[in-house]
Length: 203
Image 1 (cartoon, helix red, strand yellow):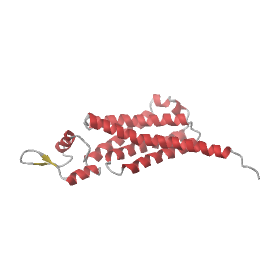
Image 2: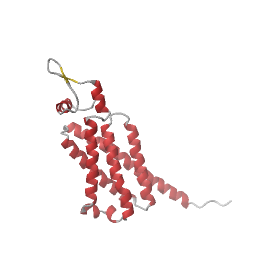
Image 3: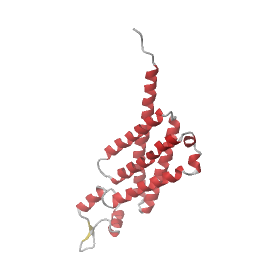
Image 4: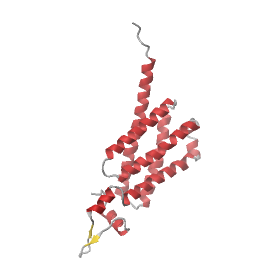
């Protein structure tokens, strides 16, 4: 029902994150209503992935002020106005990933949101004359920060290897949709320019 190992559920119960009943034989039993709270993201699960989003945002801010980022080709060739428009990409990507991880149902709508986010930034950067290659490099920068935050959050929450791998795969799924949306927007922009360049036929 929760998609986690039994050992993880036992740790959550021992830590007071979900209530467990004890049978006379010493076995744990859980109320379905308590488990539904976890599925809805109101219990331990939601807190865990909220932390992931906060960690990712913090890492993005720190990385943007370090020399490797400032010396990269995509960062060095953009002006301050484009950098300001790019910064929310990291925050919104982290928020979407945290929501996707913390939700067990209706994830399709979040994948659509991720693709729409990619479209939004793709259109904006293409209109500003930002080359596609550098747009992808900028996205990879934000994605690496998100990947690192996922690893850090998994370690802090003492996830099993299988759970940590699942979290990483889910973050990859949401990030992939942003990248696809970004490239689709660039393709659309190229098509619009090609159409505009074709002279109208004279009657």
